[in-house]
Image 1 (cartoon, one colour):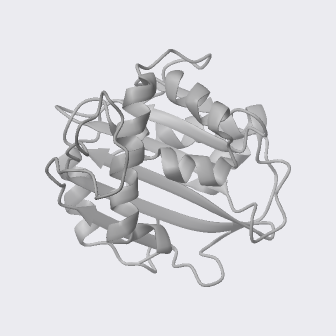
Image 2 (tube, rainbow, N blue to C red):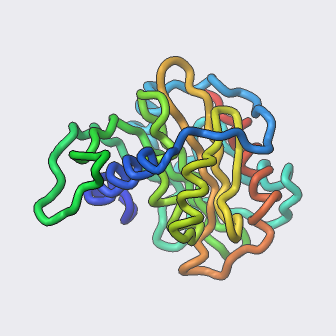
Length: 236
């Protein structure tokens, strides 16, 4: 499993996600239009698919990064996987009930306990675009509303967001069928995908700008278009 797929990582997701909700993650619309295929995936299907995935196999749900990049006008060679990273990875979370804050932690007044986190299914597909590792992350939960907030720690890390930028994105996160890029360097694309039935699904596209040379073509409007194309490809 990748480093941010540990139990500690999931706990961080829970706390940061709850903080995001506290900051006001009521979604605002983005400038992008509706994407095709929304409502075609359910949480149950994402979870059952993730349970049987081959780490050397193709990215599931019809996701085709080379085609998405081409549609966005990004002409770079793409190969599955990256150094020390499998082509496909998964994490299945069973959820956690609400619990007291650890001793010594000053709890926010509006959050007397660490909120419960729902079960989740997380699928990561890693590629090398040019010489830079690039990730597609798909997270699904069986409840309406929390999925982007649960991804805020990974979005912050990948987008190198400051506190104010993270709050801005949390306040203006995309609604279902919409795609946005993060503030600042615009280096993470986030698409909110309407779930089939009850649930919440989000897809992100990001590159490793810490351990590799950033790919300048995969930012801004081109990144938003590529992320939107990936969301449009999703199917069972």
